[in-house]
Length: 306
Ligand code: AMP
Ligand code: MN
Ligand code: MN
Ligand code: MN
Image 1 (spheres, rainbow, N blue to C red):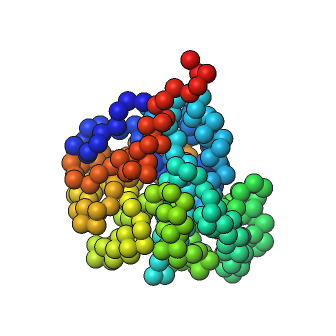
Image 2: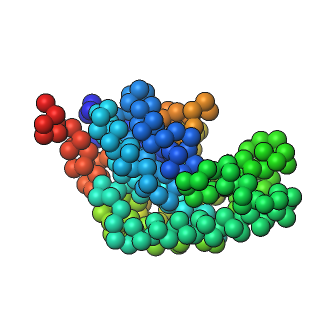
């Protein structure tokens, strides 16, 4: 693996790092091994597979990563609740999911199921008969349901023209299908991650529609709960906004993570593609003591491999 920078020096080109991507273990289109293969093809050397509320894809991804010489951090993106808003936490898990976190992930599966039933009732009121069955048809039999499955069911039934409209009218923030009550509190989830030896990363802080001040409060509460990092870059974003976010992270001594939030090929996002990182004093998350050793071990030749 080429050496990763210890500091962000400002627009060094693609870093070959992507710590936020999805597979068929949640709402992504590619199997875990295929996400890894795409990363290898695109020059991503350090990656995390961050499926929603599960680590079910990690073992398949890890086997592929080993074969292809990619360093894969076990991870998940957990759904949480903070001040009535759904907030996502990326858990980077060099020691895997164990203890309270493993129990928490089991509970997330049940929470997703209970939540899907509530979303289904609300979609039925909007004219989608048998909403749960229709969402299940979209998801296939193997994974817990999410809002994208209801969005696709609404499109398939001809009630909306496309998924974007389904979210804008019925499933996005503040709409009937935006059900958050089942998720655990942000601080609890951060506690599970930290107790499992992991690094808790506040996912895409710019995508919750918060004012700068409210985002500061979120970062305060996240850091106070033991959260260690936030995504400075999530996909493509405005450079001035990024610099301002970097200041908010620096003030709280948070590390900076970055990721594409890749879900499917053919869209505007691909593994490893995202806005460049500006020059900033905020340290990259891969230099965090909890991750640095794991990443260094990725470079060690495996016994018997030579
Ligand atoms: P859930 O995990 O069930 O709450 O569903 C959230 C997921 O829906 C996100 O991770 C995205 O993949 C997807 N999503 C959220 N907003 C939109 C949108 N406006 N258009 C398309 N997909 C979206
Ligand atoms: Mn998603
Ligand atoms: Mn997210
Ligand atoms: Mn995501």
